[in-house]
Image (tube, rainbow over all chains, first blue to last red; front, side, top):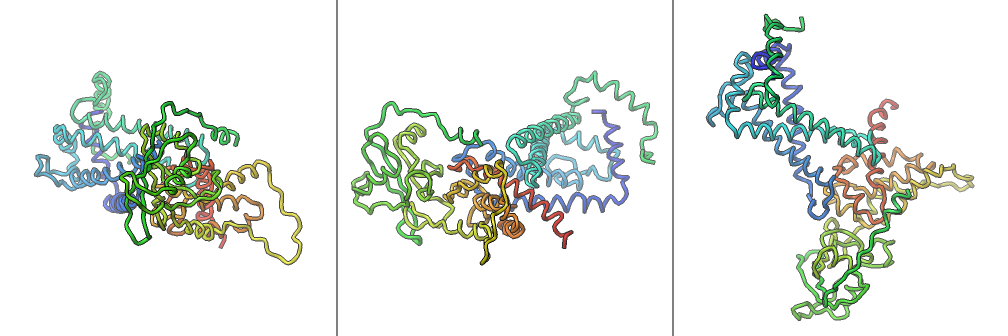
Length: 209
Length: 269
């Protein structure tokens, strides 16, 4: 929501991380691959029975698996497209964001002109936010941290709130590529933008030094 | 505790216009190696029928709705007061005890005069509505659901237990091994998961001051490939349990014991 330059600078900052390929492989790709493949394997074994046993937690159980399978495809597309520049033939760009930090905003904004892609991304953000929120809840429950009925209820609401905030922020970010300032009134961002411009005279100097 | 017991009282609705006849649709099977088939029977309605007495009516004259003479349906029953758990079957798609399933309630629930009866799907089907639930006994052996009391001499009185702990244990001790929790669990199939029933019994004996001495062995019984990790948190077990056992609480408390055991247990070795 701060505009093109801030986004491109952020992408450039990521590019300047040391050992980036190592972080990508061991910090992102391998854990993600394990989680998704194992998750799909587990989901395939589930005997879904929400129609006979119509309980909220049973629906959440199913929903966690449904969002998981959807996210497998969503994240696969996301990585292949924006990291590796595939799917250029579908009317989308074939320039990956990775390695093109100066064009990052333009690449994403160009693809988001397609309503289908925008909706796909908003669904993806929604599924990710919920999968994470409920996943945090399940983590606390499965490790025996939150045990009682009442404690679980409060924790579930808290995690739902986290999920909703992430969903709102993510949707706003997605809209920021097609409309200045995303979903917020433009007046809110105008000032911020100008401030940022003065603040960052040398964008490529890595901030951490 | 009191809240749980109050939960047992249900609002009683009365069936206003009972139908003349009711149809009982039964999923039958002759032998374990034969495939299953459906048969529908029609009996005349009377007040205060339950599923068992309806089945008894059918047994008196085993003729299907279409007039075909057939064998009397087979089912298990014993106590007829929801204490033994053996008459558990899937009634109108939901697992419960046949003895406490009143026909009037079922007719109100479904809004039709057809009642479907199926054997539990997660256990080997022997014949008609009868299943083999011996694997639940194997699960109890796996978690050593007993207290070791061995000695040729008088061991003296056991350690004392707080009233609160005794009440919690009482809730777990009500389990009648009926299998409802396993039937409703979306994670349990082909005996791949030890299930809530055995976990709650492990908890029952882990909470006992003497039983606690063998806690390590019980936890090990729950840490295998079919162990507690297979719980998917759908929480159907606690919803369907006819004894209102806090099964999920048992699972989560055991989760805590196992987490601590896994994280710090190896540091003791």
